[in-house]
Structure formats: structure tokens, C-alpha cells
Image (cartoon, rainbow over all chains, first blue to last red; front, side, top):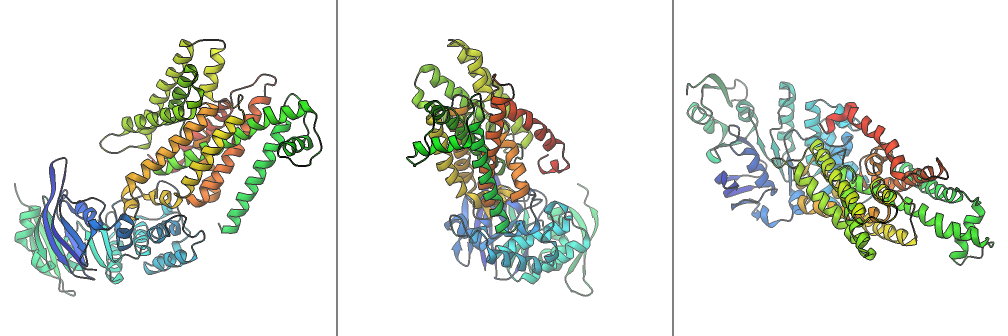
Length: 259
Length: 338
């Protein structure tokens, strides 16, 4: 599903959080949403998901404005994984993944046994390599396992657009790489907020770089992740190398710029 | 758990509830047999059953049966209220009593009782519960978030204030046995239950309970919080306020007939989740039946332990509920709400 952002703006209590963000992301692309803390990454994801309403501008999926969809129809198209989410009750992994089927249930009670939902949920777990965890308690999982289960929940939602807010937070290196590899393999259009520029460079087709609520750069990693732009946005000196195998840019930091 | 295991539990709990209710009606100062209970109920329903002595019949039909049925319905209503509150506020300590709703409902109820407009009792109790709920959540809300501990502290303040108001109003209008009346409202009692109580509690449990049952999937969606619920297609604010409003309505009706009985709404959902799992389509029916079962047993203890004196049933539920409350605070899984 192609995503078109047209001059999205959002403010809270008169404080501008995002201003005039426009971008066009093709179907099946994986986009990295970068920017310093407070740049507006999470807000942009919430606007695209239709959870918050933009003050001005539109986010459209294949030409359909998200704002024109009711919550349920939006949830059938878009899955959002927020940061550090944890359930308030004891849930098994399968129960967590089954939550993703909620937007697809019939309006009132839904089916009681839900064999079909169960099948979709188990397939989603299989796809992220977590089928064997199905009966484990959510709270007994490692951070990496929890994130993989969250991805499975989002997949069970069968979205055309997957939004991920810092999915690699608190994960070790191997878990980070395998998680992002899995997101790529899903083949759905994905937008993910990331802090690690090198991960974004390695796994994303497209980069949106936000700073202070403005979109300051947009394009393929090699065009956006340059020493000049990184220096201007993050205030750090760096070199850009070419990855010996993948060919994508590798950022080597040298020092924070003196203020 | 498979579907048939769950249904087995639900059927077993329902049969247990019916049996316990029947046995509870036989217990009391005047000896009544199970056959006489069946006979009396049958006669009033127009069934061809063996005749029962007039005195026994009026003890069964006028005194004990309305009381036992009211206890069962109030237990069901309070347990449902607790289960819904715990889910939509994501607070394992949420309960209509701890968050002040029951005490607020008592103030409303006592006001109309004193003013002598008894027919407005459920409506006034509902308004009191709703006001207390809004007050508790407003006090607990700091910087846009409500932590479970702040909610309980705010509920404590509101419950204390509402309790004081209830006592004040009763003293101010003092006639006859004020102390007894205050105790009944503050600690809860179904001693004065009539068929009217059964009608009020029954209508509330049936109507509001059905509405809540139809919201089971929406309740499930709150497991990971508001953002996650919204991304699963739930209209978060509308759903939350509709459900909390339903809880206020249910709690108001329960308090109107029984005063503020504590801890049923707190402990039953935790105990029943252990059997049904956290999914609300399974949790809600079972928690309602078990809540009824629990309160019928508690009320039977309340009127027999110190026979011929009678305790407000809230004392029994507190004796059982407070240790469970302490266990909830101390258990390792408190990371769920810290």
C-alpha cells in the first residue's frame, strides 16, 4: 500500500509538534523514520495510523485519506506497534497475537472458538520464528522475543501498512538484526522510527529525517545520511564508509561537535 | 483451556450457585427443609407442588428468598463491575469500592431515603457513583496519565469523604437506630432485601451485564493500553466512558439495594481469571456466576456466625478480601501495575 503524506501538521496546546510534512512512499517499501529525541517521530506514526487527527494536511493510503476511515476500517489496513508496550494482565503469547484479530471480528460477539483466527495467529508466529513460544506467558519472554511476538500480533492484523515505533529498543545486536530482517521479509509497506542510523541505512529503502517537527531530508539512505546532514541535525562529526558486502552507507562517528 | 472445559466450569459454577442459594434459604432460626423451599417456590410459580405451612411459606417467600437472590445478583453485579474497571483502567486494583464509587452511590441513596423519595433510589445512587468516579479519576490524573496507585489513593480520599457525608446525613436526620443504618450503608448488608430489591438488582445485572458482555472483544483490546486498543480499531474514549458509565449504573443499582459491599469486585476477577484466562468472553459470564456464589455464602455466614445477632455482610467480605488485596500488592507480578 502506497503512502502519501501531504503537508501534515500537528500541535498540542498551541505547541507545534509537526509542520508541513510531505512524502510519498511506494507500495512494499521499508522506510526509516529518523531524528533526534522529540523530533516528532512517534507523533507522525500516530497521525499516519489515524490515532491522532492532524490539524492540517492528510495522510493517504493508496489515495484513501486515513481521516475518512472509521477506526475499525483503519485497523484492518494499518498496524501500529508502540514502544515498550506491556499487558496489564497475564497473557500467553498466543493470546497476545490473537488480539491482532480483533479488527477482523464481526461487530458484536465474534466467533467464540475462532479456529480461523487461531490459524492466522499461529501462522504469524511461525513467520517470525516464534511458533514454539505460543503457550508461554508473555512476561516470561526476553525483550527480543516480546518484540517478535508483537510483530506477529501486527501480522495477524493482516495490515497493508506496518508502523513500528523504535522496534529495536533494548534488543541485543543479533535480535535487532533478525527483527529488521523479518520486517523486510514480510513484504508489506513499513515505516519504522529508529534511533540507530546504521540499522536504518542497512534495512531501509527510504529515509525520512525529522528535526524539530520539520522534515529536513527525504530520500534513499545514501542521499540522506551524509556527514553534512547528520552534522546539522544530530550535532555529531562522522565519516561515511561503504559497507563491504551490502554497499549501503556505514556511519562512523568521530565526536560530538562542540557547541 | 478448551471450549468444552470452560463450558464445564461455567455449568458447574451455575449449578453450585443454584444449590447454594437453595441451601441458604433453608438456613436460619426457623428450620425449613429443601423440599419445603421447593414447595413454596413452586406454589408461587403456580406449579402443582406439595402444600407448605403458611408460616414456612412466608419465611421462604417473603424473607429468605428475596435476600438470597439479592445477594446473588449483587455479587454478580459487583464482580462484573470490578472486572470491567480493571480492564478499562488497566489497573488490577480497580474495584467499585476501592475507587470510591460504592461510597458515592451510598451518599446519593441516603439523600433520597432521608428526603422520602424512595422511588428515585437507584437513579440517585447511580448519580452518586458517577460523580465519585469522575472525582476519583480527575484527582488521580496527573500529566495526562493515571497510575494504579494514584487511582487507589484518590479513591480512598473520595470513599472517606463520601462515607463521612453518608454518616453526617443520617445523624442530621437522626431518627431511631442511626448507628445500625450507617453501618448498613457503609459496610453493606442485604438484610432488608425485598422482592423490589431483587427487581432492581436483577434488571441492572441483566440489562447492563448483557451490554458489557457484548463489549467483551473491546475490553480485550485494552490489554496493551490505549494506543494499542486504538490501533486495533477501538474508539478508545467513547468505549472507555460508555463502559465506566455502565459500571457506575451497575454499582449504583447494587448499592441502592445493599449499601457499599467491598472487595467482591476486587478479588473475584483475579480468582476467576486463573480459571477462565484473561479473555473477557470467558471471564465475564464466569465472574458473574462466581460473584453471586461468593456473596450468597458470605451473607449466609453474616447471618449465622453470631446467630441470633447479624453482621453486615461487608465485614465478611472484608475479612476475606483484605488478605487477597495484600497478596495482590505483595506478589512478584506487581510489575504489572507498579
